[in-house]
Amino acid sequence: MSELMDVIQTYLHPVRSIFILLILMGATAAQAQRPALIGYYAGDGSDLPGRPLEQLTHVIWCFLHLQGDSIAPITEAQRSVIQDLVDRKKDAPDLKVLLSLGGWGGCATCSEVFGRQEGRKGFVRSMIKLLEETGADGIDLDWEYPAVQGPPGHAFGDQDKRNFTLLVKELRMSLGDEKEISFAAGGTDECLLQGFEWEHVMPLVDRVHIMSYDLVHGYSSATGHHTPLFSNSEQELSTDHAVGILLKEGVEPRKIVIGSAFYARVFSVSDTIGHGLYRPGKFDHAVSYHSLEKVVTTENGWKWYLDPQARAPYAFNATSMEFLTCDDATSVKAKVDYVREQGLGGIMFWQ
Image (cartoon, rainbow, N blue to C red; front, side, top):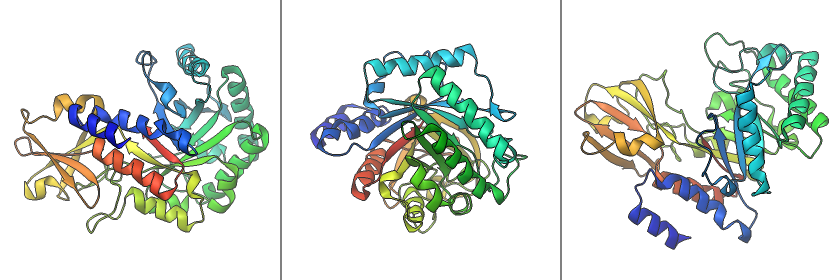
């Protein structure tokens, strides 16, 4: 594996090698229990041909939404994409296809609906029906966030914590053990400590996916790493910090999945101190990893740096006064190594 890594890092640009690095994590799976390698997908299906989905353990289609107490009807185009993903299982029988509910901005009524028994039961009935129709292998709950403020205007309350447990219990009781249940959790202390009854929820689910990205986001007034592996003196929030919280809560390591961000966040800054890192700034835009090698170039005025303590790369453009934070091949490899060293359940990426 190390020889393959050396070859990749020799002739591939770091951005292009991210996906291959993740694939390599699963390539040696026969030697031990295979860590989950999970990709979220929210596209229209046009870019699926040729993608090596067989290298994943799970692909999660996004997003289902609520309509009343049930799943909102999906369009024919969405159903076609789900069918394409499920059909890939013919050539990759170990691949699991999950359907995800919610996402950022997609759970406006979750607090109210899941706060009622009839709401939970109605949702679960509609979920079972959809799983039967599509042949998908389970559900991923991406409620952003139980008991914590998500998008402005979305209802939330302390009761969400208990109601999330009741929702998962209803799902597991109705789905049995054959279907998978996972859920996404924000990577902040607030989300992890206020949103979930870990001792009651985790025995019922297959995995929790820590959204260990956006740890510095659009509401921030300063720059920082948005998906660092480790904390440092300037930034407590990190992947390792979130994992530590879950371990203290008694969550089994094998059920913890960490996140990798296949996109960058770009901030406008007003000075060049520290190459823009931990400086006053304003979020400006995001850049997909597909575009990084074309946008973030020396010809365009960018220079790459690495925070060795956080294991996080960043780039700075002194001409345009822009700071960029993301994952790259080196940081993803560090996360993969961390998964193995800590005995965690795997790694997922958005998207």
